Image (cartoon, rainbow, N blue to C red; front, side):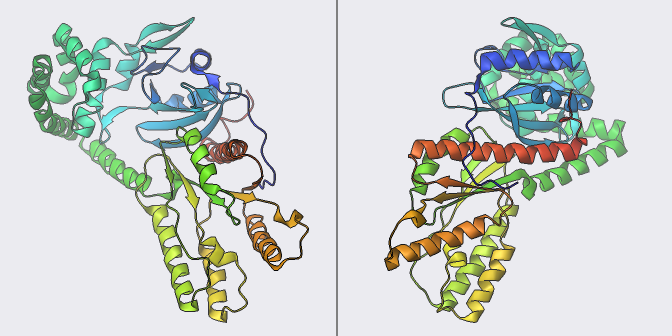
Length: 444
């Protein structure tokens, strides 16, 4: 879809206190059994973390996504899935001043390297109801919540997170036998008792020393009980992680073009804070400095080749899940300026690089409309030709928006944000339609 005008602004973001009850009701309506794993004490008015973690059955993920889709004025602008979690970013929710999006993580299993340390079905079956205003949601039993909170950093990351430790220690102390019984199937009595005693004693060094025995016990017990299934699961986990971290599919890119230096940096400074919750990582690609003055053809050819190589390498470099990258570069001057003095080889290489450069998901052109100037001066004529080259280039892209650069910076930032959100939402719809065969976005 092509865009050529400023998008319409959306209604104000829904407060978290309104969003959560509606979400809980939508999940219940579709029969989704869920529990909120942690950080729910402030519900529905506040959220302690930057995201909300739900545990659900993997077979109910499409129903959970459809429940999100049914909420008025809420759009899914990001989605990625690994075998143990689906990360969903929804726009239109404000959990704090200046925040307009929220990350929802749907945990599909409780595993380390694809090996379960707790049965998700057991946790869901033992979940307890909890009130949030006038609505009800579910939380894990105290023992299950303590184990999950501890292992989220200790087993998976190899370190102890102090944020949850006091609560974990109290729960282990009050429910020692029940905690050991929950850990026994996957870790054995000796390892389970060692961990529980270390937590109760509060000895951080001994707790961290339990990491290796915990992992070894988990691996050995799974390989002994289900050797083939466990081996395949581990191999799939590592293959999936490599693909996930180094694949362009976890990257969304937006390119700002400012051919007449209309204040791109100020606009990006204003729009970046708005986007910080649209993805797990929002990064600004460093501006590549190049001279606008004429250079020798050999130097220009070298710049073009190096730029092409860097752009492709950056697409496959390790990324977080999901990464929204804002790109800005004056190197497009090398591609779009018509220099009659350039030799044929440089012109041919310019066209070649223009064809091979990786595509961005959205192009934003800041257009100062200098062609409205009534002047025959050489400087203005040159500026008009320069700008027209950018317009022609942008209009050949699949998704673009041309913004009036004469507007105030605050208005331009809002227009740019709205365009980015719209582009992300359209791409996510296509991604979900492809994965779920249009099930999530068909009419209820």
